[in-house]
Picture 1: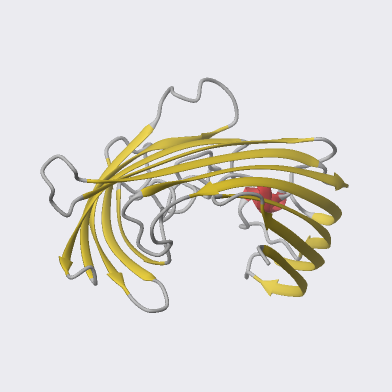
Picture 2: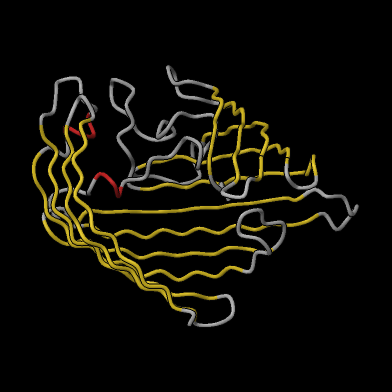
Length: 264
């Protein structure tokens, strides 16, 4: 039947040198097909955690999260996809919108929107594929703090290539990203097969930012780059070089990335 049911049960203790993160939780999810291309999903997460043993040189985002917390969150997701291949799409589109609400000592509400489009060249009938992806998200607190995992960290392999992780948004005096309450990201890419669709080359330009207030289209960051995609039986592998055209002062302006998985 066109129904997916899953769950995770976890008990995590991770020592990050500058702090220790402890989490225990349970998360069942359910989704079902409502038409040929549309799906709806829902789920709940019950979690208790703690950030402890925080050192003086820990990132500010960790110091802000110090202490114990309890959280119950639920989400509702609507999605539509008619892409021809989930691993290497060459035509079609993906749409997804998610609403999420958290209750407890770190209550919040969050909305996340994503849209991707893949267009094969039908003007000159070459093998070029044009890809576009747009994303917007917002999260606000309802009680004491927003959980660290619910902030948006813009910049890096899956958002604005050329930046280090999270550096296209707010950061502290030590140049550590602290996450943002809102994000807007646009990605444009032109791809062409080199070796019978096993090896692809591409060029790209990304733009966007993570921010807490103000206009979403003001002071955007821009990057450009080139890359290679290797299609393996398990997952695509991307190797790329990205350069930021207008980086903040003191932030790295270029980066070589290695990605296992699908960007779009």
